[in-house]
Length: 177
Image (cartoon, rainbow, N blue to C red; front, top):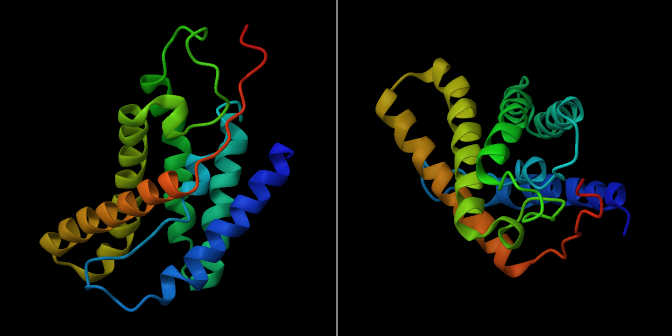
């Protein structure tokens, strides 16, 4: 399947799951908010340029903002993780490209430990920034911290479940020079 078509299907799937399933789940607790739509940005290929990564992150967040009628909060959080994603990837993947030939991030490509660090760091960044923007309106700092930790934990659980239940067939990069 073409990479562009696969990513369009992923985009529709992640936004659809978030809007029509996770947003309609009865509240587990006032601190737990299941969020998984941003995984689309995390699963984009390594080869995508930073400019397009930021544009796609913005459009992903803006699309979700459209469905939940928020004034750009999710777009800002997605742009933030799209900005920091290349830095975290450069820290976690080997510098010698002969050891690393996969085209997109996954547990199989990076190994479980680096992949979990990658996902955890960007999830914490996304949820922390998103909830900070929401918290500025409400107030209690302890509630803010608990909400960030619990939301990140439930998102990590959903991401690990998605990785185990739906393993991706990974493409190798053919031009490693």
